[in-house]
Structure formats: structure tokens, C-alpha cells
Image 1 (cartoon, rainbow, N blue to C red):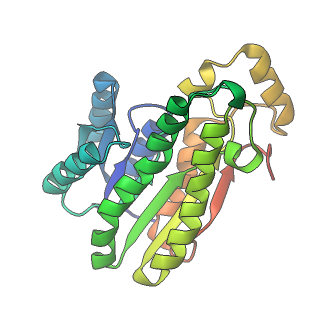
Image 2 (cartoon, rainbow, N blue to C red; image 1 turned 30 degrees about the horizontal axis):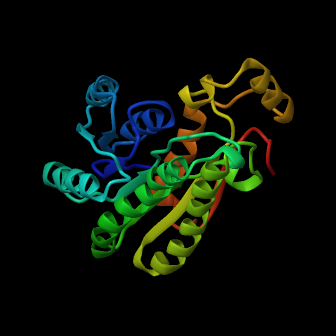
Image 3 (cartoon, rainbow, N blue to C red; image 1 turned 180 degrees about the vertical axis):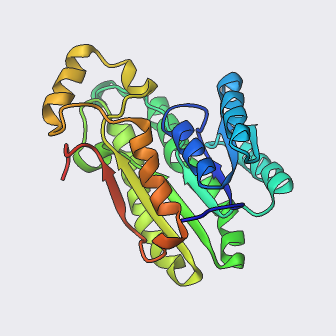
Length: 247
């Protein structure tokens, strides 16, 4: 279970699940291209933590929903690291409103980052994976895509789209040595859930058989497993990490 020297790009990896994934893949031997959109300090702290593990890391600022920024980041990362063979499409935002109050701007903003971002990165990196006959594309979906959630129509659609994207692309590249899978976290203790009222978090815990929120490391373990060379016969799957909230 060795990823020594393999280069990985993780979108939205300055904090939360992305940060945990970057550190775990670095422990496995990967060199990491760290992507962020606003918090340079947090991204640089991830880079320093990875370097302390003896791996290479560079932070790149790019809004993955904007193709020109994504293309620039990918070009710079390939120049610095060489071919990128693991892509984790993790970047995601929320703009929660009930559908009757949801603006077209908030609808499109969430789809641009959460869904178009995965397209922008995957379309750029997939050709070199095909050329090398090995690659891993891992998409960060959500339990919300599977069971819905009040006030998150835009988020559910974007994350549900990632599941459809995962299954379709997996069929297209299965014979080229590339696996495409998704991870669907439940409610995880991150900045995204920290803004929820305590009453809402209590309800989440009651609906979760394990009676708690998950941790970013628990999600990162699933990504690490799917990235491994030994996971070569697993593709088109959605790995749920939700404490039993959705089965």
C-alpha cells in the first residue's frame, strides 16, 4: 500500500476534509499540490506540514469553478511536480436557502464550484492519466446527494451530479487503468458544520446511529483507500462515511 512519489492534486485542501486528505496521502508517500481560493495562510500551513513528512508540496490559489484559473494551476503544478496521477475533487461551498428563497446567483455559484470545478480539473488531468495507463479520480460527494436536506437544493444537485459523473466516467476509462470513485461524507466536524445551530447538530446526532459527527480523518481514510494501487478493481462506487445515517 505504497504511493511513494505519486503526485496528487487536491482541490480545496487548505482546511477540513481536504487538509486531512492531503496529510494522509503525504503519509502514504504522495507529493501534494495544495489548492485554495482565499486562505493563503491555511494553505501554507498544510504545505509546511507535508514538507515535515519528507514530501514535496506547493500551494496554488485558484477558483476551480473558473476554467482559466484551473488551467493555470494545473500547468504550474505539472511544471513543478511532473505528471499528476491522483485527483481529489474536494472543493465545495454551500449557499443554503429554501428553494423558494434561492436566487439564481446562489444556485449557479454552488454548481460552478462543486460540479463545474470537478469537470475543469478532471478534463485537464485525465489525458495524462490515460497516457500513463494509471490514475485515480476521487470525487467528494455528500450524504445530502443521497437523501436530500432542507435548504440545500443547490448543494444536493451539485453533489448528486458528482455521483452521476463518477459512475459514467468510470465506465469510460475502466480499461485504461483508471478508477473513478466517490466518497459521500455524512455530517463531519468541520468549518462547514460549525455554523449550524446546536439544536440542529443535536438532531443530526440523534439521526446518526453512532450518535456523533464524523471527523475529517475518517473521511480521508476512505480517500486514501481508493487512491491505493491495491484498490484497482474498485470503480464507479460511492463510499459512504456517515456513521450509519444513510444506508
